[in-house]
Length: 379
Image (tube, rainbow, N blue to C red):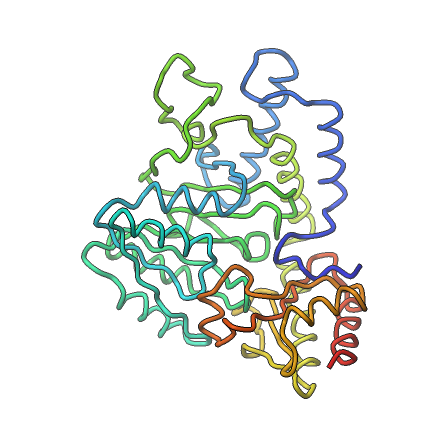
């Protein structure tokens, strides 16, 4: 199988990730922070090392500000539901994933309102103006994706976050499609909350993610329970990261995430990004030269896009094309709405979805050649 569905999760995982997860499952099934015996202490040490690895990777001085979560969706929910109160207003972008759209829609029941700032492809100034025009007196938070998971368009999050801080508005960035591909330096950033998926561009196992808190406003606890600390207290601990890490953690996944980051660092973020985007550029040019192939963005320039390409065939629905690619040609892509209806609405693909191609560090030019050849035969 030629795997080009890396926007959902990267595959294969690097050897050091696989080996680490297997070895820990076999030799160290102990609960970190929940016991004083040698195995539990070793597990706790490895989780701390993983926390430090994440904090160093994103330039955070205090590792306790790194909260491990099940996925990026959980991290986003912690921020959105833990910061916003009745009467608050939140702004989201027109490219947000359902991990953002559905929580803010749910909060309407509690008296929270939201506005959608439209993204103008190729015009960051206009995009910034759209965010500015959505600001109200009661705007508490702006939640913005770093890059569209459907169309690969990179948003000017640095400028958006700087604008928000001028108005005293908190900022949350969804880096599910950018972490591991684009440099993110929280020490020199106006991002207050960074939400990441561990299993995509960071090459960790599925079931891993993180929330990094980069400000003094700590959200309310999302889930209460045992943390291994202050067990005599009936109330949830206030200290970080315990406040948000109730229950037995995904120990092997967290260490696997650390190994995934080590893999990314060994390859180099810039090198991975340039390789993957070059493959997408090649696919864009060749598919764009075919009759009846519909592309939805401008040419994916370096710095303005992440390596995500969506397209359709004029006479076929996206899911049929995805099924044909899998069944007849052994090529895995994602077809449909990609859990991002706002993004599809912006490109008039809400009714038909798109075929999405996302390479990884392991993808090759031969993979793209096979895709292009298959699309030619299908059309």
